[in-house]
Length: 115
Image (cartoon, rainbow, N blue to C red):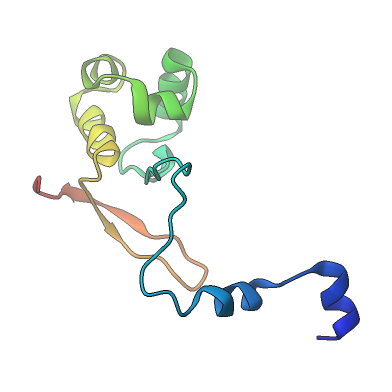
């Protein structure tokens, strides 16, 4: 990389990695909001396009479905099994296989036991 390019564009990813690589513990700014892991609805087994459309028609957005809608309300639209899987995803209780190398992880049908 030329010095001219670096001075015009600023630091790159490698520069940032090198700058923080010697930290003994992560630094998380106090004003950073909590991170919420989420499983996209299209990844939930058994939730096809028709059921997804029903959920969006009833609750507006995928974020409402994933984070705000009560299980009973979900069950009234898509049934108790899918509602349970959506709530399990919300609570981090779905078994997930890791992705990598350009592939997404996958959701298994079984639900992890509560910890």
